[in-house]
Image (tube, rainbow, N blue to C red; front, side):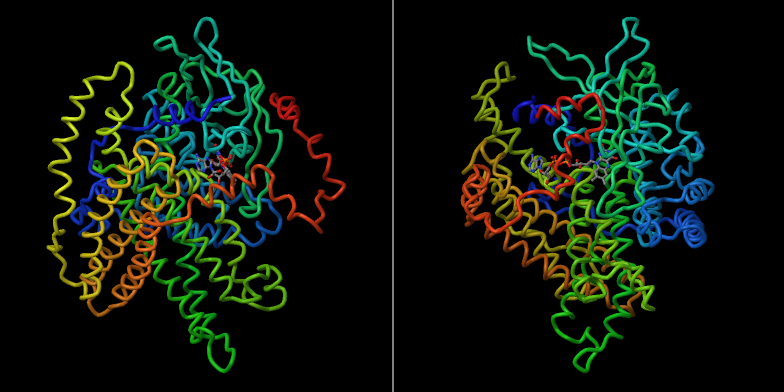
Length: 637
Ligand SMILES: Cc1cc2nc3c(=O)[nH]c(=O)nc-3n(C[C@H](O)[C@H](O)[C@H](O)COP(=O)(O)OP(=O)(O)OC[C@H]3O[C@@H](n4cnc5c(N)ncnc54)[C@H](O)[C@@H]3O)c2cc1C
């Protein structure tokens, strides 16, 4: 059983500590609004765009001919034919480079393709994305040997399906508890895998999996250090079994399961990277991989703008189209502005990923967090705008002769975006950790000197003094307003100036808050979430303004990007100011107290006149445990 400290130590050890390339978000937390990194907004290279356009047209064609998302949602079955057709046009090799038989798409084209698929069928996005955003191609691309790439990538590009297996019944956000083991043979030629992996997307149908497992621990300074290691495991393999297919509130067409490994023999040459590098490989894979989810979410929301336009014009209540009622007007206006913000953010982040000289770990986390949270809110609002029809099934609408606008399906499908590939809470932790990094590096050796740390405490005090003597006055100086923009109107220029000065305020406030809480700030998740949310909003404001400047430059006749950027920025500024207020004055202690009371069962007095039991048939659920290795342990619990 890993302790909290061990869990944090392991996450810390797997963290990339170096910033080789500039990151807009990292700089922002230090008080620098690097407009030069956002502006000019990236314009896709014409040749790259042509490649993307051609593929998107082919994908559209396959979806039109073979894919019925309503039927998939109704039956929970995904037609193999669709996968075969998508494989024929190269969709399973979109991220695999040409030399290994893939399409070698840029992240921008990959994002565009996922956005197109996401505007139609989320189950399909998940098949395609689990395969190559996080499945075998991505870690091989980043960490594989040439021999591994040659062996696996051409097969994957042709349509063999892959999956990513990290999660276990006891391992969700916290990999330190990993129980799956990989035991080396005496001669070192193979490993035996034992354990179970839960919710493995594509797992039941995959031809190969990337699996994280514990190899024998390393002893360092007399201390045992757990080693998580990554392997490619081919299917079928004796001992590897799919023991349950999981079903969810959405993504009904997903192939997802509980897999057990019982002495599964894996050749040593299938190890990716070195023993002990597995968690770093998994986290780095997820860094870039998580850009797929926001692209698909943005695609879905863009499509709903069309449905929304039709609906709010044609639905007449109280003598006017409902879009003219102010409370509906606000919802649809926010829907347009937020969709524009997602689009601006997604393609900015994709272009960062396409550059060889950008670090996207924070931008990808921000994009995933912002787009999944925004989509949930936005689709819930659109469901409200659709009234009773929002709650009605697509099939039911269709069967009684109405347009089946799939808002409830897509809301169900996309809800998991806030949970998988790193939950929103985990995105907060990742971003907060990096936001505090500069200060942590300088201050921790003074506040909490580690045994054997390099340099005396006095030398660290001197180092910190030298840094802060320059940095601190800078975050008080007025921000530059020389933005080199030609098309943004007055209000949008003012938003830009707000971003620049608020970055400094953010950095100052973070520093002061660190001074107040010292090393304990790490545990103030709610405060840190306020900081992260301010940072994310500032980043997205920057993306929307840069995109507006770009679009206006191309077509001065269309001023609507000004409107959208302005509305998004106004909303974001309200949220930012609320977050600053919450940093200064909050009732976080009340949350702590009431949560503690709930955990101690102190509110049971409230639970009366309720049926406490499950329906009779389901009370013996523990008897249904698949007969896996961990089954007995779980039953004992
Ligand atoms: C449809 C679906 C598909 C999936 N596909 C895959 C896949 O292909 N491969 C794979 O390996 N996994 C997959 N997963 C697993 C997914 O990545 C996990 O669900 C996710 O990592 C969260 O883990 P958990 O559900 O165990 O939640 P837990 O880790 O138990 O967390 C429960 C809650 O506590 C919060 N929490 C946890 N730790 C902290 C903390 N330190 N601070 C604050 N809050 C915290 C979480 O955010 C969450 O809200 C899939 C899951 C689903 C539902």
